[in-house]
Length: 458
Image 1 (tube, rainbow, N blue to C red):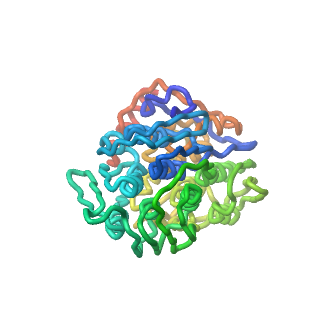
Image 2: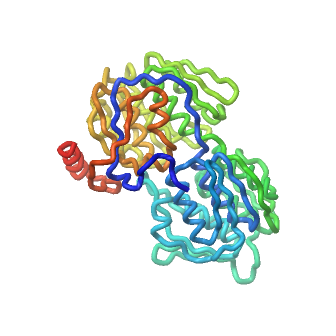
Image 3: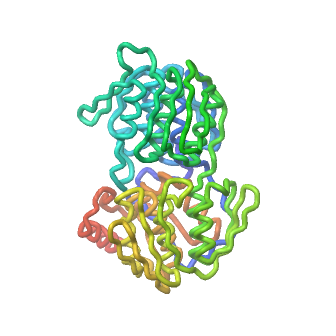
């Protein structure tokens, strides 16, 4: 699968040039959910029959996951936003480190492979550097289902205990409602013998989407979207066709961008109740929201400061914390943003302050005093959502900005600049300036040096 935007092979040397003081007008077509598509690809490993996935977003993360499946011997056919997946002839082997290192969702394959083949071997996962995100919950849950797991040289090796031919049902209570662990255990339990009960389960829409597809495949999963999920294991799962749900995070990002620029746009298709917490805060901050069927319209007005606290669904999503902070930098009054999910998800604060923001962070709580304007400059996003936040900040700034870190942005936003352009933003992707890779360098001095190099080159 190849992303639609051209010439993205040297993403670390590319930037988005954005003319500030933008006003957005029009309708945005929302792509399929990245976090749903990735786990559905992993779930396709549970059957030897074909899975047809529609509304698959064209993202680098989806391309990476597709390559992981191909490495296992899965046959993939792509057509626009459709994937036809044939997992009939899989070779159970250790996945190469270079394939899984940049994609945390690759670890979700362990539950499907273990349940179907009795063994799996997967390197420890990577992804955005936003926190520890330990895999303890995955491992403890798989142990409860009857797996023996050892970790050797950064490789997680799992197999069903010798006296058993299948995993077996168990009562599992997660210490925290981990989305990844919930998904891994649902997939593993779907082919286990007997009943599995997962308590304190995550309730995110992407989990509900996974359970819906698995039930189409013949699984028996009850109460998806609730804190207690029940799975009655079956001997075999079959193929199906399934459409990926719309990406609530992409939709939320565009709605926040419209609020920040006092603009009026419509996002569609969406499932409005997936965005209730975000819509409530946008209304509280002064925007007018209209929900109609599978679309949401926003009319951005004067921006009032509001407090948010990230929480598992149905709370305010951590993936929209950074974009919402960009909005709050120009809100009237003072606001407080508390990040409760990931300990390193405030990497955008320093850059927003360099643009003229007034933000102080202590113990993962950001205190923000709204300013009248931000100034455009050259910036490097350090993870997926911080890159989106910097673009929103660039839209409301009073100068030209150049935002690097597109290797992060393209992981989760399909044709982001093209969609913004269609809304009237003066934005272009530049490909001729090379910079050092700062994606894993969180030292302030090193980042400042790279920014200095960029400005000299520009």
